[in-house]
Length: 288
Ligand SMILES: CC(C)(COP(=O)(O)OP(=O)(O)OC[C@H]1O[C@@H](n2cnc3c(N)ncnc32)[C@H](O)[C@@H]1O)[C@@H](O)C(=O)NCCC(=O)NCCS
Ligand SMILES: Nc1ncnc2c1ncn2[C@@H]1O[C@H](COP(=O)(O)OP(=O)(O)OP(=O)(O)O)[C@@H](O)[C@H]1O
Image (tube, rainbow, N blue to C red; front, side, top):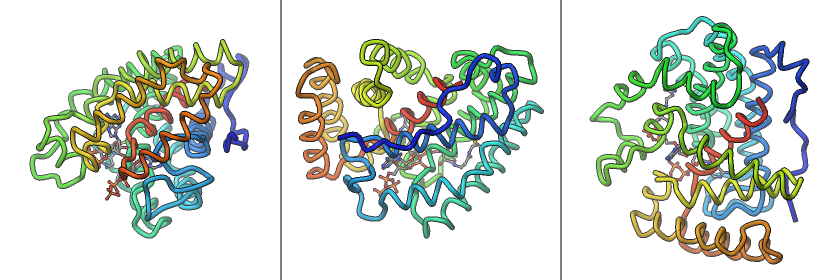
């Protein structure tokens, strides 16, 4: 049933944590993004079996995109070791976005991931340079401490990204607000959900599905708002809350339930891309 099959560099032992390098951090970021897209069932999202609510991309588009991003994560982590300004990180992120768009013929596969995981790779580099513990908590806090105010200030009134349009229309914060605050949804919702489910099931894929639903139940996901407005966001949050209330991945029929939700999301053209991006963030932070 699980589509996730490749085993990326998910875990490193304590000896190698002592020598965490930008190259290793970059591999962990790519591994986390691979695990995210390879995971199924994941309502409305691209996975190895089908394209969910998307008509312009499939699993192979994401793999091509990831190949194009291989150099980006170690590079931004190396840059992070010099505790750069947010403007310096942006140059690196914008350049990576261009490479992604070239690899996908102009399709947005990893815009959120380039932003979220780019910041976290840079923060991990900074944490190494500043003698931090490189834990999930320490690295995510670095993002807020070093670049939080600049991330907030970088939102331009005339920006025509989908996230910016949704912010003007509904007042929702989206990716910038989450990152600027040090990824509170990932740290306080996603990571505990992942760890608790892993402890109970010993299955990383089941833990990732549980984490995904926990995020979707709470997140103000600007992708859902863009495609479905408030009714779309409410539908997705309620669906996730019901899935969790019925036991989540611990319920005997959870796979059928999740698969049925996938069909419902596709029929409504809904795609929780923000929750998918934050699942990638949680998997990365956990692998640190
Ligand atoms: C900063 C960005 C992500 C701003 O995004 P914006 O809010 O304007 O919306 P946009 O529609 O472009 O993308 C939003 C992305 O965030 C994800 N997302 C949506 N909601 C959320 C949420 N609540 N939390 C986290 N991620 C979310 C979506 O999946 C989507 O991929 C981006 O557009 C940008 O400026 N990219 C340039 C590269 C850059 O500056 N990088 C910074 C250095 S690392
Ligand atoms: N597995 C996944 N499947 C689909 N989207 C994902 C997945 N993982 C992350 N995402 C995020 O969702 C976003 C893609 O969603 P979408 O196609 O709705 O964006 P868009 O191009 O801004 O909007 P639209 O297609 O409505 O014009 C990407 O930015 C990506 O970061």
